[in-house]
Amino acid sequence: MVNPTWEPRTSLHVLEVRALFLTLIRQFFIARDILEVETPALGSHASIDANISCISCLYPAAAGLTKYYLQPSPEYAMKRLLAHESRSIYQLCKVFREGEFGRWHNPEFTMLEWYRVEWDYQALAAETEQLIKDLLQPHRQLDASEVYTYQSLFQTYADINPLSTSTQALKKLLQAHDINPPETDYDGFLQLVQTHLIEPKLPRNKLIRVIDYPESQAALARTRKTANTMVAERFEIFLDGVELANGYQELTDVVEQRTRFQRELDGRSAQSNPLPIIDERFMAAMASGLPECAGVAVGVDRVLALALGHTGIHEVITFPFDRI
Amino acid sequence: MATYTTSEFRSGLKIMIDADPCSIVENEFVKPGKGQAFNRVKIRNLKTGRMLEKTYKSGESVEAADVTDIDMQYVYTDGEFWYFMDPNSFEQISADKDAIADALKWLKEQDLCAVTIWNGAILNVTPPNFVELKVAQTDPGLRGDTTGGGNKPATLETGAVVKVPLFIDQGEILKIDTRTGDYVSRVKG
Image (cartoon, rainbow over all chains, first blue to last red; front, side, top):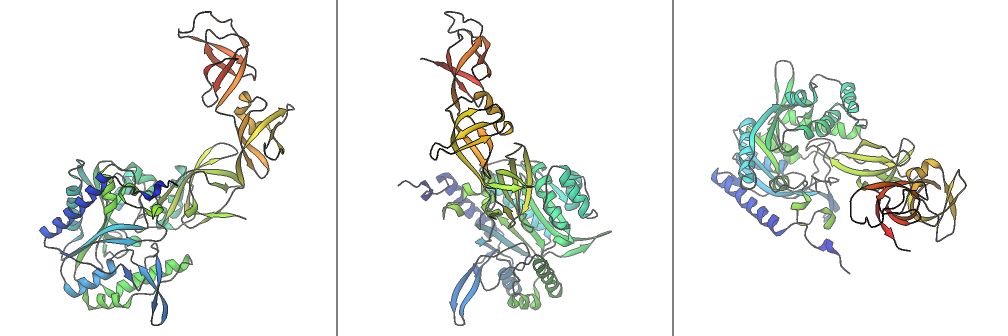
């Protein structure tokens, strides 16, 4: 019987461009004297992040079948290395996320993550844009990049101030655009405005850098007091309405780190989601001192897809989730 | 009560929304890197035909709609209802005027139609893509004019009015594309 799903989704051309991407990425970091590292894809702890679910597996350890987790990001392990070696490092690896499957998502995907010791997040955002431009250059010519703060982005494309509006106003705005949103919280509505109203309107063919997120979306970024509010020193880079990179001025304060984890755990417990255990090895590394640094993660499959003009990442993955 | 979770969403899936059966036309998974996951869906209300958009939190469950699509033969009408028969079970069910809607003008007895059934009642009837119908009335045909452009209206035996070439005569049988309402060809016979 003929079952055409045995074949890869990718053309030979895509395979060649992907191979070239990996080479160019490594050259980019060699030229900047950043060390390539590998950390385990399998970890003993799940991510604490309230919005990330890990794929787990059972391993027959001494104490019986023990749950291990495929890592959704190399962040915790790379920070343990940073705390120990205090030098800039990068990693190209596969990461895994449960339940993420769609046009721009695959439960297993290729991530490029790097940390710049002693760097500021704005400088790292510029370096990230340089890398993306280098990768895209043979395939498409981008127009000049634009920079927005999270606040100016919302004001420009949705005519609302995300730092001083209300849950009700956000819900009304979505309903006025015929979007029937589910019940969610303030940040949930902000995200819906971003994904449903703003991303489709972002100018195409240029990198859009968004900086300084609401404190509630700080994740592991440092926060800073501005004139009238706190913002998280975080950036994201978009191309054609698609998020390509997410970076932070990394939080180095271990006490604040534990507070953030607790907040994520509270969020999980409010949604009756599983409560992961805090990785005390990671916390010990933070306590020993994470150097001041900025870090960023780039979705390599997405950059590749946009370089080649695809409207999703499955065309650039040999065997996406529905073919494995 | 059967339910689907958002991970089962795909186009064609039938779900209940606000007590109406609906069909998913498009499903998109959206999730900012550090944000919540949502499924953004475009849906057709199978009762009204209207399109709407809705966003679910990923992982949410939605009631399944007991909707089936089967091919049924149109049998007859009593003026109020139109009766269809399952050619396998010979079971008959009726459709009201709302369910028949635009299919009405193409329906000829014994035609096999795609029928959508919800909770035992006909929701929607799609006529065959091509039907063969007799011309009931049209202006006399222009002999010999088989090449030129130009057309005229013709009323078919079902009451539908279509544009036909000038050479068509009353009593002829025509092949019509019901999706566009266009004349396709004459049927010899």
